[in-house]
Length: 399
Image (cartoon, rainbow, N blue to C red; front, top):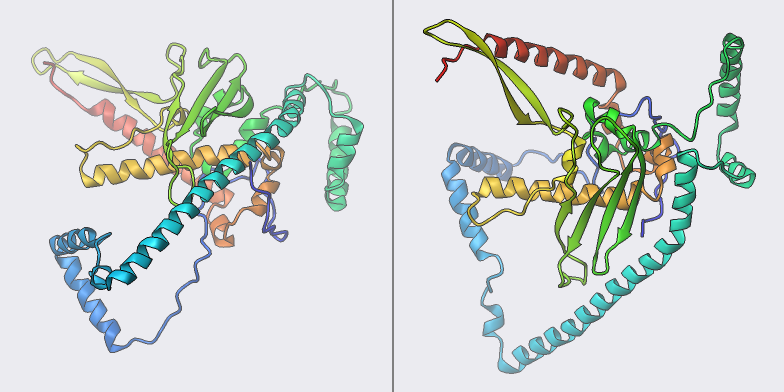
């Protein structure tokens, strides 16, 4: 069950789908910031040690290896205790095992409670889907309840602006709009952890997203269900991703994430958004004839979300394993954000109001100013253009 929105920050202006930052802002921790102390002789010693370590990475690796080997090893204190004291320690361990059993029972009951209330939420999600997709209209009571939270000053400003627009377009025939266009795309772009995954190429496909649902598995785990209308990119009507937990509970009785599995996307010819085509000119040194060679390479896309990373194997080196672990953690967190934040409060993400409840620093939001984003996009376009020109000038002999 999703956590209730808390820690509201009313002074933070909620972004709209039009001014939402397109990339992820770091989440601030509640850790106390360290103070600046005066420089002492100890600090100078630390600085000298840091300089030595910086110049000797092998020494750092050796020390880390030694420290890693000490984790979980006894200091010898417990073994030195008298027999009767050791017996009491064992007794406390036995009590702790009983506590662990109760913790596991607690987590299982919490899960059953979540499922119970999820069954009550489901009819509300169904009503939302029908309104979003234009198959029904909200009741007058629902509209009035929603308008109670609106700011009267905003209504006045919008009313004046709307009157001016109506006056300008008085002669134009009214165009009927069904449902709420691009509802889920806008909501996802306002959910910061998801926004940075969505590329410009993805947006056209995500405009056909009609609903995002979830369901619990019979065993601990959940499935995210993305529903799409007919589109130019793939034939799937639904694309799912399932998160599985391990059978045994972790420390404290929590469920332990195991792995995720995503559906295969049936891309239409030439429409796979997870790859791009690179073109290079090749010239034969003997005949001087040229030809264009095309190569398909992976590229960033939201739809990579449905191809989750696999757990590292024993053959992976430490750096590769660490990178995979980070991607696994990010992948799981994205699934949790969709399950716990996006689905339960989709309208708040669509309007941008949910961002007022996120634990974000003001500096973090300022770092993603709309103008900066546009500049970054222009820079990226220039770099892509330069790369294209360089690739066309590459001459490689034919084999």
